Amino acid sequence: MEVHQLQILRELGDLGSVKAVASAMYVTPSAVSQQLALLQRNIEVPLTRKEGRNLVLTEAGEVLAAAGASVISSLAAARSAIGAFQESASAPVSVAGFHSVGQALFAPLLSKLTDPGSPVPQFFDEDVAQQDFPALSARYDLVLAHRMDHTPQWPNDRVIVTPLAHEPLDIALPASHRLASKATLAPIDLINERWVVSREGFSPADVLGAISAVSGSAPLIIHRINDYATVTALVASGDVIGILPRYTAGAAVGKNVVLRELHGIANRRRIDLLARPETMHRRSVQLVVQAMGSAMAELTGS
Image (cartoon, rainbow, N blue to C red; front, top):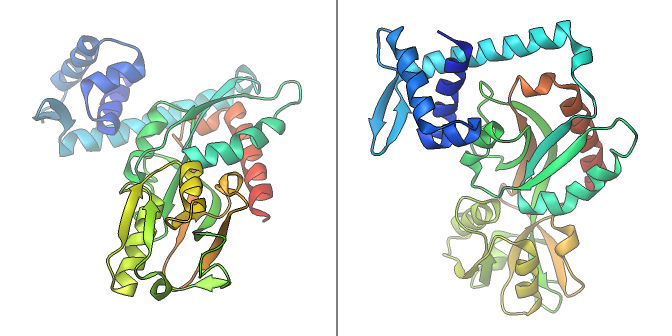
């Protein structure tokens, strides 16, 4: 049993297919299959099974993958302990973020990493449904992720979670709207409104579902848009209202749109940094995490 074989098994559990593992590890699918076959020879119970066209882990495979993750993390910790000088503080750090947090946070983060010897962040745009954020840690050093308060927590056996913000989602109204004069809104105020909202699986759609449940009225959804700048433009037209995050959509909100607090439902999302345990042993990653926390604190005024 080799460490790289355990790594491949772990990647298969996270990414869900031999092709995805091969892409993430920069090897061929046949090389992945060969290493899985070699690992299976040493194990008496099946580690994988076919599910449609994909190869997935059995329960035994999941147990071994979890144990392998601990081995990989321990080896990373050992390397860090005996050779911290080998890990450059200025090494590149890949950071994936969903659209709105990237627009709000990437530039301020850069401004905090200008000293000689600072890490070099490399930014990537990844706007996925909540359940897909942890798997991105296979491709990026740090993953900016969001989840609503009432949804399942991140899998802390797979990723280290660094909380950054607890962000309310507000109602976005045309400045001329009849509700714009109110300081706060309740779900019942929003009956019979026309909506622009995100696709299912994203925070605004979750909030609108809660509004519908509390008010007892099905929402009239006109547009499904994930880009907050587009949402703001549609709201400004006066034809629809929307839902925008208070801190990370700030740059997109124009003078013809107002945000109003929503009371009576759970409408906050958590913005967290996700990383694999072994990644967090790197000094460059630690420095970026610290700078990210500082940039987010300034954005939220906390």
